[in-house]
Amino acid sequence: MAIHSTAIVHPEARIAGDAEIGAYVCIEGAAEIGSGCVVLAHAVVVGRVRMGTGNRIGYGAIIGAPSQHLAHGPEHAGEVVIGNGNTIRELCTIHRAAAEGGATRVGDNCLLMVGTHLGHDAEVGNDVIIANNVLLGGHVEVGDRVFIGGGCVFHQHVRVGRLAIAQGASAFSKDIPPFTLAAERNAVAGLNAVGLRRAGLNGEQRAEIKEAFKLLYRSGLNTAQALAAAAEMEWEAEGREFFGFVREAKKRGICDLLETGGEE
Image 1 (cartoon, helix red, strand yellow):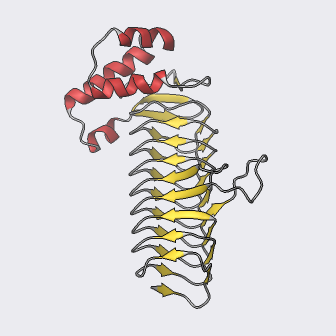
Image 2 (cartoon, rainbow, N blue to C red; image 1 turned 120 degrees about the vertical axis):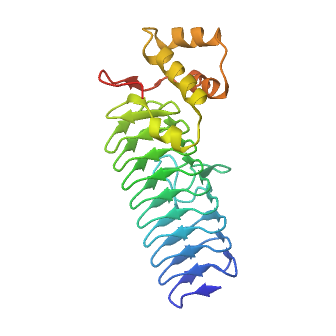
Image 3 (cartoon, helix red, strand yellow; image 1 turned 180 degrees about the horizontal axis):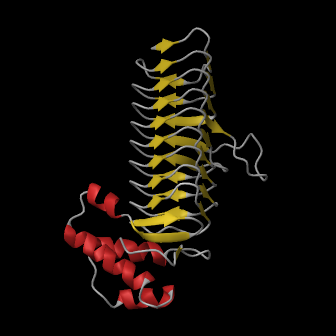
């Protein structure tokens, strides 16, 4: 174990023998830091943080600070759970869950670029890339293999479906369906065609996603009508995933189609 002489580590913290703790790092409380993790200078790990293996925490990042929810004081006992192989760059902030038993979660193999903020109880899936200065409000859910462009902001409780992409400097208070390209304010501009190919989806799978997209956004039906029509049709896994996500949208609903938006 390599712990710099200037680091401050709580006696209850559990740190793997091959982890590296840099200069002026502060680890407060019973954090768990797994094998191969590196915590760089001036980072702070506070409260109940459970970190898997092979994670790299950037300079000045703050992991596990209390939520900014006015109903909860700094003593609340939620936690942060981080998987394996993640890179969390400089000045990122990840707040712990707002209530006992809750968790703010990051999956495996994610990249959170400089200045990313995850609010309390946010959940980020696997292989997610979040660019600089993105803000996720409390309880935001981000599916696997999502890419979020720099400067995007997300209202609390928004969901982002698998393999979606969000254009930089956009803002969302509605759910973003899987496989789509989201942009501007609460809008989708088409499908994440490049991302679908890179993810290895074959032509038939992409064609079904395109048909599902057309039914929802290009048929002239409203969302309820499109869901009813979809329920009468046979779909493979991707179509079922697409309409299942839309069906579970809460009262804010899903993003609308940009008037200039295409299908791919």
